[in-house]
Length: 501
Image (cartoon, rainbow, N blue to C red; front, side, top):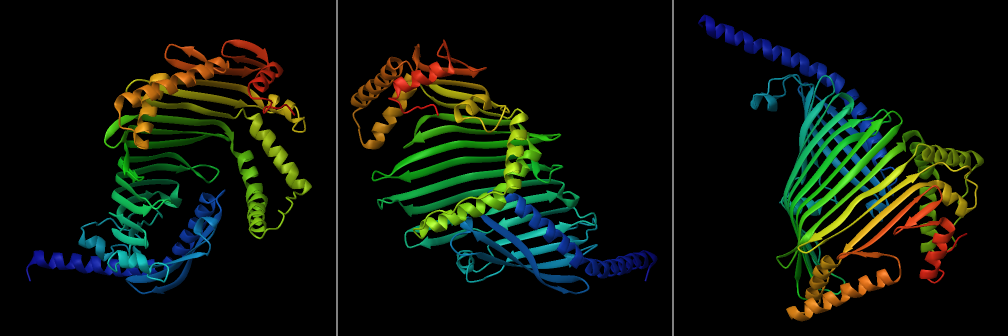
């Protein structure tokens, strides 16, 4: 044996020895790591499902430990209204390669040491056997996770393509989905990116006409950081290239292109804020462009401790009460009485006062729809504040709760004509002149009624309404009045349906 070959053999033997020793050491630590990860996952599940009508949990059923690998079995349980009438139980098997150099990583020339590489997949059970059949008897959900020695993770999740009969009238065809996920130690930072090529759902409506929903080009991205209060803040983005819905006796096709949803949350001290933006680049009917749409909402100055305190009452008292009331209604029995202890009442009162005292603002920054001939839009800003007392009469309490209310609505008559023309086409009208005349007449009637009732003004081709309230004064379409005068005005227009308590 020459010198070079001897050196190479020595390196291989050394790596093998180190790897074997490291694999044995990893195997002794693995159960503790898994139990810690499962405990963390259950905390995140509990946080994620706050406010929902369901609970979920993950548990380690068994662990078979060997020198170079281990096999783990997990059980995930979900119950509550969001999971259906009966609890749902999913089983997973996990084939874990011990570090520092798992064989699968060596084969792909990934030489950075890791604690373990996990290869998990959904197991076949009576609940999931249809999924397996639709995935040609392969596990429809699989994933790989690399666990670093600092407890950081990175990996992939894959949902296999499916062609599945949901019932005798419905079918789902799914191209599959791939998701890449990376998390820092203790999941303080999480990044995820996913893609789905297409999904088609074919079913029937209540009138038994065919309905088909087609989605294509779905991308998802998240960049999140765990806040000091244990929930995640950051950015989430979802984009959909194309969507088509075929419906009705004439099988009309409603299309949406370039749909985009972005939401962002951030934390500053004890206060949180967030916003959500939605855009549809093109709305079409039967291949003809109708228009585009946007919506933006925001929330500012949300007191986090107060919100968490109120959420705790909601979880422990209101959610069980809602379930009990629903069960009583289903049985034809009277609803039970909601009873709070003096301590709980004090907690609710203190939470509300703190929430309002922070200057909470809710805003619909933009709601707009644009067609070829016009744009309609609306925005709203509501600033809340702490009243002198939460025990005030309802009318005084409402006045003191609202520090500012600003509403602006603009309805474009040409845009209305465009939309009414589309509605006529859906209804089966084909004569272009009749469609245009009917749409114009309806838009003019709407404008006349709104202006004639003094609820709006005409500004060119736009029907406009403006309301501003602050310091117990109302300005409505340029006219200033007290709150009492404004309520009397509304009562005169709506036949007494608006009342002051």
